[in-house]
Image (tube, rainbow, N blue to C red; front, side):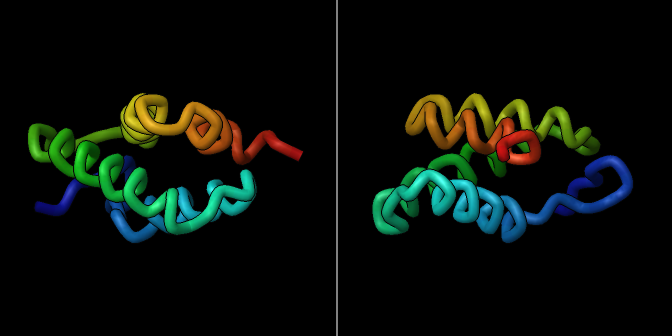
Length: 85
């Protein structure tokens, strides 16, 4: 199912890319982050199954909540990567 995200489409590949970028910024080993990203992506995709339209804020909130379960540091960077210097 394709999901409308504001005026664009949700891209699982883009989410994975963003999470890998943020994990590298933290210096987390890719091997340790891959299972986290897989779990977060699965949860987000399950959540999306019940929605037709979402906002970027919806998506970021759900991703952040899922990341909190596995890596609070990665969750923080994901939520704030546009503000971190």
